[in-house]
Image 1 (cartoon, rainbow over the protein chains, first blue to last red):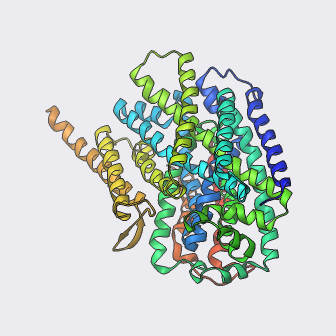
Image 2 (cartoon, one colour; image 1 turned 90 degrees about the vertical axis):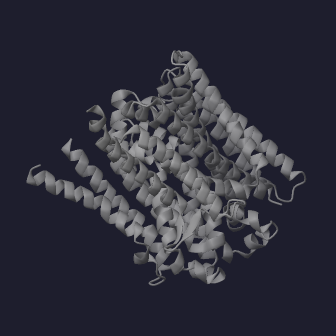
Image 3 (spheres, chains in turn cyan, red; image 1 turned 90 degrees about the horizontal axis):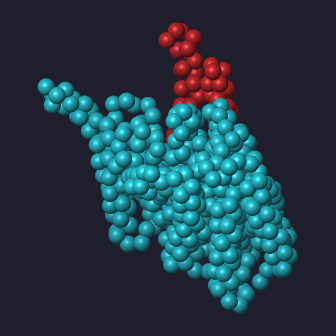
Length: 497
Length: 68
């Protein structure tokens, strides 16, 4: 059982967090009855704020839970997250300023707005919006799993810990829903900064204190499996395709696009994107915790009290608890807790935008501004609770694997959104077919890779070695989108004759 | 396209392509030695490369900005 200082620090900082969330409403004031004011903070965010807001998408439960958990269980393979973030910023640096410029000119708020205008197709735009909403759900669920892992570690040994944990999560979500409802993206950005300060402090302390206390990194690698030192030769294709697939997918997620569009100018966007790989250093430290923990006997002993399938997600919080002073653990654990909460808010907001603008408004075009903002706010709340319900009903291990499925889905909008920005010859029909075939082939392959059982792998064994399914299904999608557009182009003059 | 803007275009492409090539060229860094503070090469190189990438990307951003 852990000492009460942790709870005192944790709860006090959580109160500060709530305060910041509500204060967001008054910060850089704008008329929050306009959708772009509420969901893009009036497109007024400068270099530093965009840096924090997009960085907030990086320091999520993905980095606290999924990656360290993978490194803990499988070793070097899951370090792919580091080159992945480097590559994703290269993609963003080239593509995103162009999308930003167009969006500012034509008033787009989502990728689906752009697609509708560019291809003059409601069907394609709605499909892009639906893909975005669905792909985001497991990602939000993962955030909640991350928050759960903190509570599990804090409450271990107490009576009724399961019930206390569920009630705490519910309270946290009600508070979150209340301040995103009133403050919109402004509240999320302010709390993102607070969260990142806590996380950066934690990362720096861990990387200094833990290696010293265990007598150097070398000892951790000795205590872990030998396959953790480098990547086994047969996993090289998996590593490279996980980098590529994830890097192409990140900036297609609706919340990442909202982050980009909230920038004040294309130049500021470029500068903050260029600086973002620095955020990856923290991610690297978190990933290494999956190995460091092997050299901390108390943490290993604590972890052995849990079933093997849920040990991974507890690695980071237990390492913090057993290697840092207790008051500081409170700071670090809160950082991780809100590290799930803030991104969940940003993601639910992005989903709500898509639902209102690109689905409901298509069906009911004469929606007033007032109803639009109302529906957006309410649906963002609903999405949060759908994800919460999802976590209560699905075991933690599933939620992490489903996030990989999210990547496979979202990457299928790449031909329309990224190539649509540059290539004039693309046509809507082949894009629609490509999207549908990409999604269904992706789902089929992931089912095949897991023998139609629970999702544990997102890699398909091929003659070239295991390959991330997102890359294969995107390949099929691209072939259809481009091939179909070329054929259609050749046919049009004939039919006109 | 005059000579000057052609060179500029190539430089910009290289600033994006070189880091990407290294990131995807897994065999380049998939080795254990030399170690740094007990960290295998695989781990410290990729972490260090984050800083190098930032340098490449900032230069890219700077050059694009100077045109406009």
